[in-house]
Length: 342
Length: 177
Image (cartoon, rainbow over all chains, first blue to last red; front, side, top):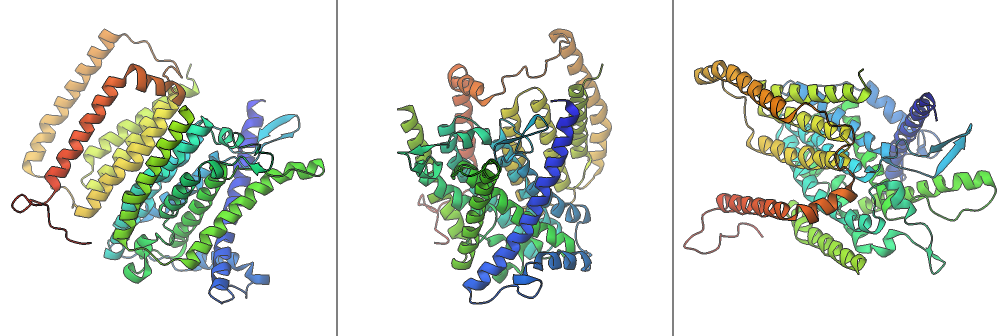
């Protein structure tokens, strides 16, 4: 394909994916408020639009028009940079996530992915590991003890759980033999005995458990939301932020949740594989539909856990990460390696 | 002719050098740490241009993502203040900058003279994880293991230095359950 077609296609794909991602972020917030509301015997948002569906738009407008307050005692360059770092790295990792097979338009074949690189998984791990700086620097530059404690907790927690997260993924990598997310998904095609899908969650249930726990900790979600524990730290690392800067942290958190859900879908739930039937147009849409449906289920579990579990204590969090999750991930890795070598 | 690879290579090199200079010039430790992250990221870009994509990704994950987070963590924890400039540091600048220039010129001259100036073509390094694995675990197994033992010794030394002195040979008192 000529270079200009490639560039135009890349720009269009980036724009579409970013638009879908930001909309998904907004509606994950709506979903969370709605689901948690119903779990707590409330209605959640109902006033703005049918079922409160326009609530995200109203929230966005509100964030834009709120006063953007900068406290006088902050270290300004990093105070401004921190939310940007958080949101930029949260949105970047979507670039390597494949969400379907390829489509053919005007005689050219386009893979349904912004860019297919052979180290896709490592890029996601790298980008998310750099994303810690947003939280850590926000806590430090705010020059406020609650923010600083939140930032410290966040960086310690994220570095600790990154190890378990990485190790839980190695089992899947051994089975697939590739870092490319597309290859990993394609390795999960087909069925066992004709009816159980060949998804990694059935071969690597322990790895999936480790991934799930580590992912909750990485995204600072309940039951591991110590960096922003309201009862102890006011609001944690974003105590001093208001208006759009606060909204950026909010967007980063939900974008990270979606990235984690995408990764879980690709690595453990078979990606876009699912029953394909019907006319050609339906066959083209169904893989993307299955991909989105699996992400939705994963996000729902996220919200379900949030509505169910209380928060850990900080020493419990660290003990769980280092003394339970890490050994479990290592045992799983060794067992997988022995089984494959056999 | 300037190819896009050369332009990118020079750009990443410029970022790395600028970050390194900024690291020295900044007086606040957190700014220095952030400049070091920029240097690491630029080096990852250079590795990527040479075709060592695995090394580039690991560079970002390990250095920029983990080790530098710990640096920033320590700076935050100690709440290290702005560096003080004394008369001694002015002397160090007066003597150090010419000395550094002479030293780097010397190194550059030696390298150019004795290693030739042939350039490394794009993708010349063994980049794919599939080729790095055998290299690491067959050909260079001994150096690899020695490095790991060296790091282990460093960790044990740090634990010994950091742990509180025990009373009468007994284990350190447990502070909290």
